[in-house]
Image 1 (cartoon, rainbow, N blue to C red):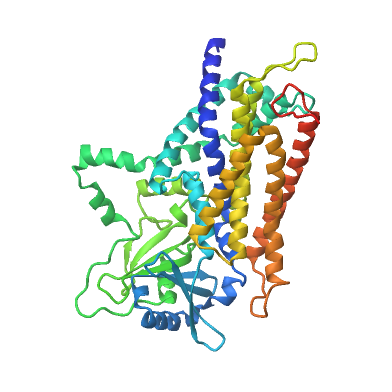
Image 2: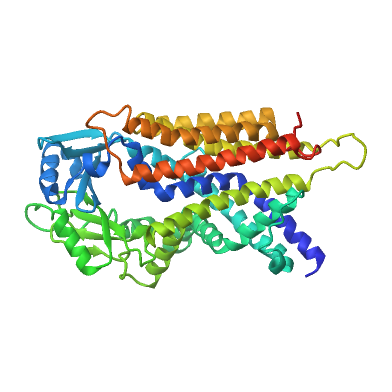
Length: 521
């Protein structure tokens, strides 16, 4: 390949990567954590949900009847969360809150507002929008455009690496040349995880720019009728055909589970959403998972809540046509809703590796533009762009890590803070870290913020242990698999941040004096 062509692709790779890297770091880091979103929700609660705020599946019909009798608003949308042979009940109360109902030791109905899921939902929103203010539609749309640049960076990066691919793929040359070592790590992670990154890039373009594509199709092809057509085909909001006579009682969870599992034996239902209970057109939306299938959101099916007849089974594993199977596969490959815990752990590691890919790319850009000492003791004056990019990279990356850990610590301390306080905590900490990096410079801020990240992440398991032991009442005591999973994962991350902090301190003190990352004492 001609050297001029390689230089062109290298320029494209560099600038498309730089422009997309900061937002993609946030999206990838938050996305990696959302692989254990359900565990995060369980971790927020002082008492395991499967024990304290759920009932045996055999008792669920009584709980549903009593809840609907005392809370008519739950008839609009009532969710039954399934966990083995236990079930938990929740519904939106119309005030932006989620209500939860269960039976206490005396079989009395208890209801309370559930904020435990809000912190996990906020992390998921960061994953989809990278924290861009203005709402989901704007953030997802911008990320769709960012992922176009991301796709361009992936393709051009592969072209640049092709001439030395075999020789350099598994090379990690550790030594005094830190730039060479970072480049080796960057290239190896990029090439080995290329299929994963291509799937993420293409799917985010489809998700983020889907509304824009639909609007163009609506005007040119469907003449303004596309929205109505899509709404009528959405299984979650669709209604069963209206029957005649008085509305009948809905089928109970056990009956619905039997009907779904008899049609898809390997499908494991995880929730049932009843809509318009005791009204004409009542439906039951069953979602779940099938570890053997690439199914959208794990797979789902819509039933008539009274008769149990399938209204829409297009996205139930084993059903559907070629188009639904293709879109299901795209969703499953993006969100990792297949293969069980093994795939979730793998996606967690790939997400963290992807975040490193973007961070290391910015560091390489800075080092490539470093003015080096050419003799004598006079330090060259580095470009202002290098200092600014170093501060932005450090402030964005470490600010995201510190802010997410801080928001989760707040949510844990409040036993599940509502969405607003969690959001405020994240942006306050993130902007403070970004401002600190711009004020202190990338080298000093990297030391400060990596130490803060380690401290805030380590505080998560410490606070959880204190909550469940020292500060626990007799009714609060109890550990869950979710708590053990999150505490263990946060501990490993904190140890990783401590190791990075130690390496950063060494680099700042003993690094090359002509580097923006070096600040000798």
